[in-house]
Image (tube, rainbow, N blue to C red):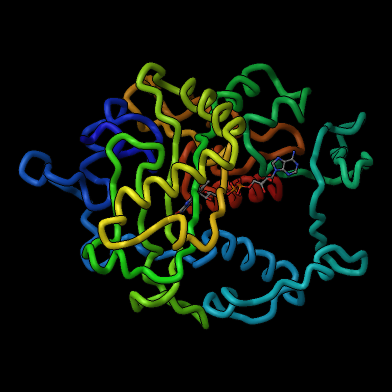
Length: 346
Ligand SMILES: Cc1cc2nc3c(=O)[nH]c(=O)nc-3n(C[C@H](O)[C@H](O)[C@H](O)COP(=O)(O)OP(=O)(O)OC[C@H]3O[C@@H](n4cnc5c(N)ncnc54)[C@H](O)[C@@H]3O)c2cc1C
C-alpha cells in the first residue's frame, strides 16, 4: 500500500525513507494517524502555494531585477502574466547581459591567475570570454568536467551529487466534472506507472484565475519516477535517468490515458474523448541529491560532507546551485547563490 508513497518527493521506495521524514511529510501518510505522531503540521497553510508556471516565475522575477526593461511590471502578482521581451536580454549597451542557448564547456584560470577564461558553445561555434571571477551555478556533478584544474578531492565531492530524475506529465481536460462527481482531487496509484493524478492547486494570482467550477477547464498533474525494488541508493537514479531518456512519449501517453480511465471511467469519463492535450516534462537532472535517506553515511561533521568539500572556492571560481547544499528546494538554491557571490566579492 505505501511502497510508492514517497516516489514523487524522495523518489525512492518507502523502505529507504526514515520514519522521522514520513512523520513530517505534508499531510503524513494515510492510515498512520494512530501509530506515527505527525510533526510540522502546516495548520491553515496547505501545500498549495506555487506560481501557475512553477519556478519559472522565480526566474522571471530575477531577470526583471537584472534587466527591468525585459519584463514589464513591478510585483510578484503581475509577473505571472507578464510577457518577456527577449530582445532586451542580450544587448551590448546594457550593464547586464543574459545569453541564452550558450553551453559552457570549459572554465580555467588564465596563465597568470588574474582572471578566468570561460569557453561556451553558441550557434555551433565556440567562444571564450575573459572574466575577473566566475560563479559556477550549474549541476555540481558536471563541474569536474568543465574545470579540469580542480583538486581531485574537490572533484570527488562535486561528483557525489547525483541528481534525481523525475517526470511531470500535464494533462489538459475541458472540465473536471468527473473529479467533482467522485468527490476527489487526488488519486494515489499503489503500483502503476504514474504515482498519482491530482487537480492543479487552487491558486489565483495576479490576473490568473484557477478553474474553480467543475465546468471549467483543468490541468491535471501526473508524476512518474521509475521504481526499482532491486536497486537502492543513487544507482537507482542513474538507472532511472537512462530509462527516462529512452522511454518514448507514446508510453507516457498510453499510461496517462489508461490510468485516467481506471480512476474516472465510472463517471463516463473517456480519455480517448476527454483529453485535450498532454505535455511530458522530463527532468533527467531534477531534484538535488538528498542526504536524508537511510543509506547516507553519518558524516562526522559539516566539513566532511562531500557537497561541502565540493563547494569550496577555487581561486577565482566559486560554486553555487542547490546541489551545493544537497537540498532540492529553491530556498537552498538562493542561499547557495548568495554564498557563492559573497565569496566572489570577498
Ligand atoms: C520537477 C521539479 C519540481 C520542483 N518543485 C519545487 C517546489 O515545489 N518548490 C521548491 O522550492 N523547489 C522545487 N524544485 C527545485 C527548484 O526547481 C530548484 O531548487 C531550483 O531550480 C534550483 O536552482 P539552481 O539555480 O540551483 O539550479 P537550476 O535551476 O538547475 O539551474 C541551473 C542552470 O544551469 C544551466 N546549465 C547547466 N549546465 C550548463 C552549462 N554547461 N553551461 C551553461 N548553463 C548550464 C541549466 O540549464 C540550468 O538553467 C523542483 C525541481 C524540479 C526538477
